[in-house]
Image (cartoon, rainbow, N blue to C red; front, side, top):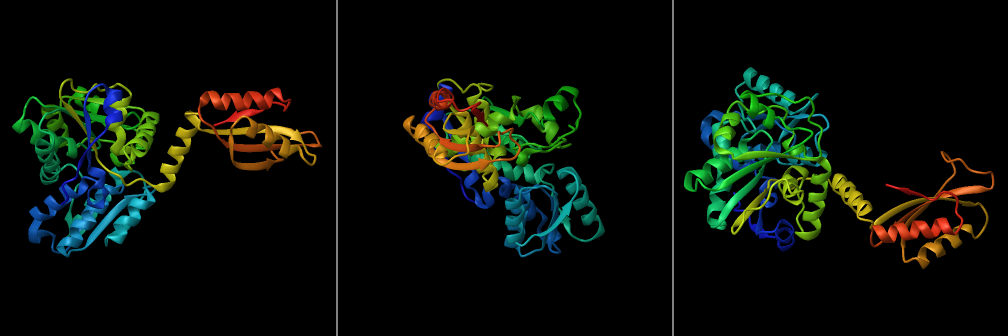
Length: 386
């Protein structure tokens, strides 16, 4: 195991209004906290996993179990739902796991893994609903007690509940006054309703940018643990998670997946206030994000902040027309990133063409200034695209 660093964030602290630090578990071996529980579980199994282990996972747990199995010299099979992040699945395979794709979500993958374990002598390793897994994740809480002596509030992502259960037990067993707050994403948040009703209630969908915590039903073990040990749970939106990912990339220089960024999203959105006159620690639970998704999130942020402008304009299809438009754009201080002629799907005169410009701008006001200049120059219906 690697003792992951605690990273200070002046910008986040200023925005939140109090001291905030980041527990960078995205820098853990295999890229997430999951390795803690996997190593603890395989150690507890001993010779019972000599014929190998099997699990179901969307990616992070798969990598952790594959790593732990390789360290013990045993085989590993992982059932993965179709549509799981390719980078995570490939990483598990590179660690020696045998991958089997399943339809549905993680729940169906876990059911297939249980069935496989029942048919043979391999040991089943649950991603969260297991005492040894929970205990292993609690090691993160033990580290926080020594790394952040004045910690008063800890914000933790919640998927199945194993991570927050272990952290809360570890922290509150030593310092009961420390608050532990969980965060789920609105498109897959079964815990608030389940805690209210006192039984595990499944949600219909698990489609979310935070795929690492896309668990549709709380665990039978973790639900009562969270009810006893966790102070409260909040829910954040998909857009807020995306903005938190970009914030961490730009300001903290940390690559964090959606599931790992939900705590920062809760702080930036004001859903969770920081502790006053003490330190708030935010757990960045993982960093295994697909490069394509990260690029999409960054582009979306650039567009919304006015740093990326996509402009569609109609113009005369004569020599020099494009040069005049580009000269106009340049005169307003915009930088051309890409240009494309579009002659289909747009209503055009026979002597007209349309061009799509991708421009680098400084702000929303600057983007509006460029668009206004194009409109004032007589170009018909310049459209701002997102």
